[in-house]
Length: 263
Image: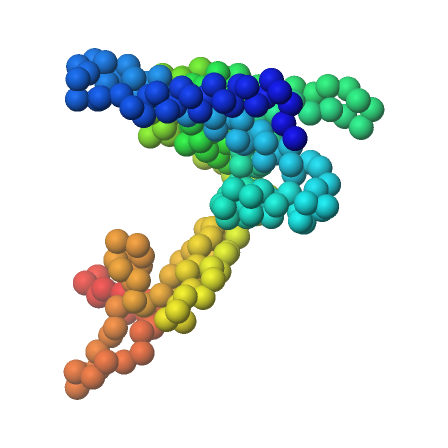
């Protein structure tokens, strides 16, 4: 059962939300609407912090007596998917302080982002941009540079939309790694293929990341992929009689001396 102070705090939140829900928005000016929207957005982000922390905390405990694993129990109680419950815990993990096995405190993995997140100044899209940026940095980038980059993005995230932050992160990545040097180990961390659940029509969605060497080869297996997705769509060659022939897996070398032959 919830402690008295927790129940009182939640009751105050419910009362405040009920009062806001009764407001006549038509009587407010444009400036008032924007100010109200900003306050509500920040309050919603504070709620997100608590929701994600709750999911993270449940994942750290043995709650089998409540019905199973933490993400399954939370999903059933909140009527969300187990995937969403796990996602909330993953989001909160780098923004939460930890302790070592000997009880020593550890700062969050993303300390600057954690401060802005817990202050209600970031949403999950900001976190996604920063987290993806840090994940995609080459392994040879030093921890000091990573920490400086994380602090830089967190500082600007409180002033930018997620799409603007994404462009800033891309420019920062080019500054840190101007030659675009990535090792096979860097790429191997990212490569993956996920085949989704089969739909009623028998089709399954495939998503993933493939290496540069695999890319050109795999595209030849997708003859029906629209040009905007696959720029190297195979072209069906035709025989002199006009009937289609099998697409060649690789271009035929041009005869010597014929500069106008197209592969």
